[in-house]
Amino acid sequence: MSHADALDDENTFKILVATDIHLGFMEKDAVRGNDTFVTLNEILRLAQENEVDFILLGGDLFHENKPSRKTLHTCLELLRKYCMGDRPVQFEILSDQSVNFGFSKFPWVNYQDGNLNISIPVFSIHGNHDDPTGADALCALDILSCAGFVNHFGRSMSVEKIDISPVLLQKGSTKIALYGLGKRVIFYYLCPCMIL
Image 1: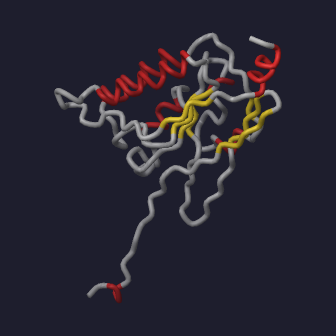
Image 2: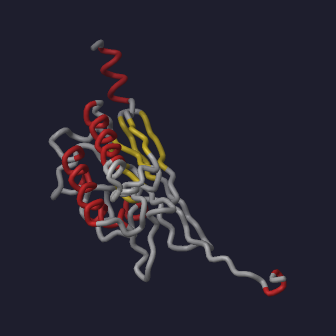
């Protein structure tokens, strides 16, 4: 590797982007039941082999808001296998983490948590299949976030006023901003004059 290539690596983000994995889709099907798990395994394996700086998931990691125990367990196994390790993270976060991850009891990126050993951070928004629901507005990504495997961002607690604060990252002289907005539930009301 030349000196120029080494400098380029110090300033270049290697990002693996994936979306719509839909873990658990048709998991009871005899033929296709493991397809989504094989897909996630391949994504994470490629991230590790190519020594990416981080993985960016664009929503719908899970096919359902309440995935089965098998789906959640397999997801956690794969994240632990591929995303934990001794390889140091080569970028820093510049934004206010309490704003980016303030909805969590752990409002900071997982690789800066002294109790975890993350080598490949995963940043994700939720999609329309795995969106937060219920009185506590929780989703499966919140479980992964609480466990320290995923940095869940892009949540908005209101549909009337949406503030998007980017996750700001820097590697060497390169800076990037991750903007994300997970799917929002919007209630539609029919005006009586619209009913024929």
